Amino acid sequence: MLARARMYAVLAFLLSGGVGIISSTQTWITANRADAAEPLLVSGADAMPLLAPLSLAVLALGAALSIAGVVLRYAFAVLGLGGAVVLLTGTLPIVLDPPLEAVAPALTKATGLSGDKTLQAMVSGLHSGGWAIAALCAWALLAAACAFVLATAHRWKAGSRRYEQISDGHHAEAGPLDAVDSWDELSHGTDPTGPSR
Image (cartoon, rainbow, N blue to C red; front, side, top):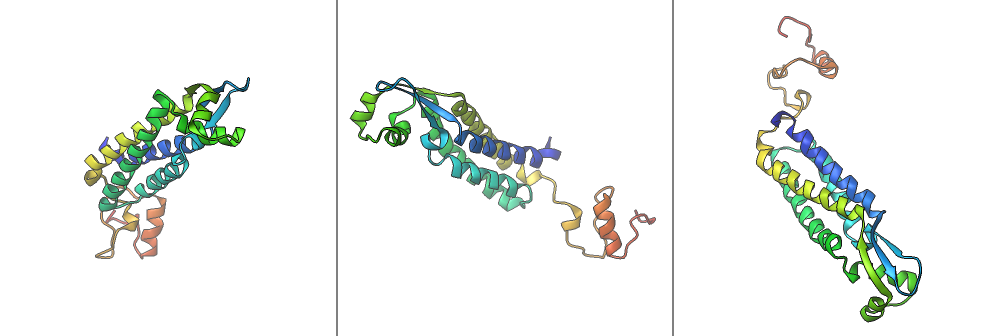
């Protein structure tokens, strides 16, 4: 498993961020209105304003994690864990019992009215949707991925040979060459098919 640890961690970051971005445009809360027949559908971005920016940050961390050295792996994991905590604490109340504050901006935009008492009288029920639950699962996956990175990052394989420093004119032996490595060897004046290989 450690041989592919970086790949698993990066995929978990990208999946979590992707779910967050997609869910930000989808319905998180359905607000039944006492003053209208049609319910108000509140998107993830309206219910939690930090959703889209933090999801983009998670995507960026995942992309950077794919090429990061040991120290940056830990830094990215800590940042990701902080983001996961913020997103979890923002999403969990919406999933369990959507608060009025999560739909207040959308209600005000739809009706032109504001004030907690006015909006409370206008809403007959709030219900969370499947996208909020999907996002909550994504944040749990992100937190687990961050913990995984913190526990295993020091044992991940180093980057590709072609990015390592050449000390004696030859690449360090690390297994069979691929097509790009063969071209790199030729560029350095070494025959990759020679007897030394």
